[in-house]
Length: 440
Image (cartoon, rainbow, N blue to C red):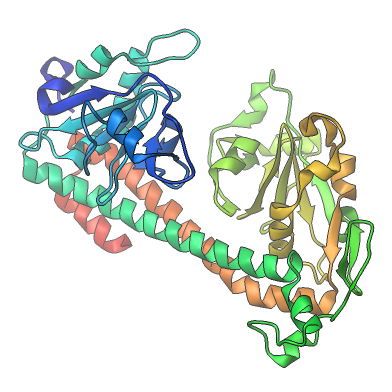
């Protein structure tokens, strides 16, 4: 990048930089997304989880400037510097602690600015300017005077944005595909093992939806009482430790930093935060343990395709491992025996839907649950034939999810490598285009 003496204030390259309303917008069940800082991540706006506001509120909250496609929305705090771009065909308004940035199209291509602000150097610059000992934040003057390297010609800006945007679009497409696949898997599980649709259909003399006669005959046509309510006749509940070998992870003493590592060649060490940042399958961790730590503290290696469940502080996060790894002491893993009708996919979907409030009787479920309770938690057993049939139907869905997630993480790694090099001029557009052709 150019020397800092030649950098240009953002206000000189933008048509407008507008602050949000400094109060919480009234929300409702339907309407227009209001973008909070938590809805801004990795260059995108999470519209699915945004608060919704009425048309009247939208007009009041956009009186200063109505957001348009390709405007940028920047988080002023919590966390500082996250930035996303308004997609085409979407109406949004600013939530608290956000700023609208509208680049001057004759000087600065919006998606180029987006990727520039996502580079590690620009993120570091923003973090350094953030004020506040308790909650770091950026003032409006900080943002207007925030300096960036002189942008290249518009054609080059657009070419750089196209390369990085193509990778992002493919990642987003993969994520949409996985959300669809996950929804299909959850719908089948819910129908069979929560709503008991095949059983109810047979009770009414109907053919269960989506089943042939050979599959339908596996399901009973009546219910019976159990300690946890009515369940299909012949089905049972079993303690989790009767189905799987349940292990708990460990954390070496934090004062002894030699056991911890950031080296990708060491052993991935999963935290609850890592689980929250992953998809169905967990591959990435922020920290690693050196091999000697496993021997010193008797930390068990968790096999590939094993269910992980968080049960302390944050209860009920569930993921499947993609490769071998280890975990901290707030996470349990469910290692299935070689010969069992239960599958990791069944356990994953079961634990995702499980009501963890039934495990404790204190005001704080986070304090009530321990490893003993996790090992004794009830798991529905519909019998080997139904479990095997379910696994056969669902396995290909999870294989596709895993494959797609791996592809997305590879594309993310390529994008994160190209991003600073393209914008600094270290790699030429033509060379980056060749990389793009190979992977997309």
